[in-house]
Image (cartoon, rainbow, N blue to C red; front, side, top):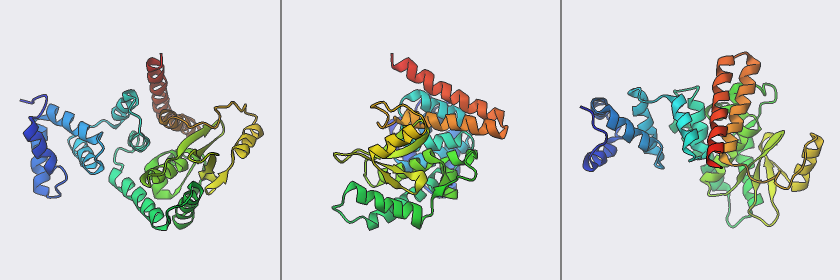
Amino acid sequence: MATSSFELHRKDALLALLDDPSPNIRKALLAQFAAESVAAGILLKEVAAGSNRILATHARWFLDALKFNDPIEEFRAFIRSLSYELETGALLLARSVYSDVDVAQCCRQLDEIATRCRELIAEPCSAREKCRVINRVLFHDYGYHSNLEYYSDPENSFLHRVLARRKGIPISLCTVYLLVAQRLGFSLEPVGLPSHFVVGCFLDERPFFIDAFDGGSLRSPEEMIARFKLFGGATPGSALAPTPVREVLCRSCRNLVNHYTASGNLERAKLFASFVDDFESTHARHSR
């Protein structure tokens, strides 16, 4: 009979085996988890949402193997949790369509880019100098670029596909940029404009912005405001302020509604519209 939780000593023992590559150990764990499905589901989902990326990857593998995971409901649960973290959210969003996303591979690709950046950064250096290094590695060494030709291709919005194809739209390229910077301990912020998306650096007395869709061009606040005016937008004082992670992910979902609608995939468009509704209703409920 399934129990609602594992005793502490059993939990520790199971977690110690979670990343063991032995097929026999995996088979034994699968049998144990299947026999105690309720407790296993609770434990594995807890680990999958935890900070240990290696264990989280293995926990997700067991959840998938045991069919405990519903990627769509997993993303909904993330939306409703209010615990928004960009990398986790971007990967869960991708899994809502591509349930077989290799999360570990995505992490390795981002780690590799960050490692190369770290090798080229000579401390002490300014925030601008660090951005120039990231630009060189991301856009020149690795060849990431804008997908102008097929801008409305839904694959431009899924992190694992952007990493594999090395191209995307402003918000997805900015997401890659932010995740690389995060690995470097370099604090940058997403900035969502009405007609564009950039990365903001607010570490110096005077902020500047990185346009990942334009090969990492560095732009001043004046240049960003001029872009607002070019597209007929208003320029409130908060226009260039950091965008919450919640809104970054919600905006990705809005893009996918539009892109799937344009491609005639109304079922997928409806799915992402429901995610937008979840983001908005959750935010409205908790901001009263």
